[in-house]
Length: 247
Ligand code: ADP
Image (cartoon, rainbow, N blue to C red; front, side, top):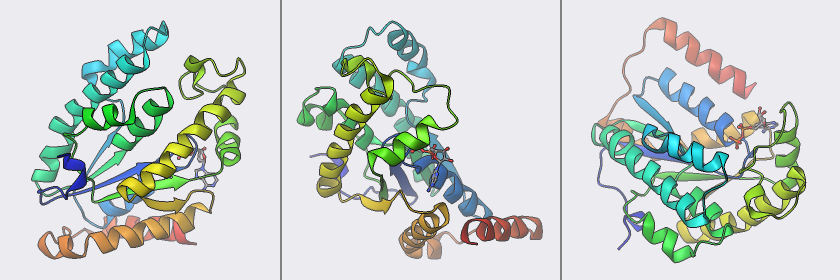
């Protein structure tokens, strides 16, 4: 049975964010990260596709567009397996809070749109531990397009799904590809009980909702792992962060 269907056995907590490019998930996770640290928690951050193990191979394959959807999927799973073993499970065992920018649901959404069978990719990642909370930042495609095209030189080849040959125009390709990814995320929300956040709302409102959900998830944890006493300096920083996102 997949470990993704049962709570993980570790004393730490795992919170992950998911959503299409431009949904605002990194912005929210970064604010949550800084707030948790300022509150005195021990936090570890990790992000999708960042393991040094497959970075070069991935880069080369992408550059020459050599990757089939299956090899692409296997490379991402290798990256994930490496990070799970070295960066996710050890801090969870040590009772830390782990924050992940994208998790297995990214593969379940993107790889399936690229033509990989849903059961195959779920099986590939069946060793993954279930997060305590998986947030899904839901945004209309136009909101995301606006955000990723403003202040950027251009869309990246793979984020626009250009490898799929849907359109020669990157923005059109992005719209077609990411709209299908949204459809997959909708299915995943049902299947895995993702916590939906309205990603089109103001940054401070989203952050308040995130903190509410996280605080709830930490009720039991906090009594076992009281936050470290924080010096006055950090307490000021905590107050500043809080007021910057709630005012
Ligand atoms: P993602 O990680 O989902 O790709 P980011 O957090 O990087 O998205 O945000 C993409 C862009 O949108 C950034 O320029 C960010 O400042 C902006 N952004 C994020 N959240 C909001 C929001 N709620 N309202 C307006 N702009 C936002």
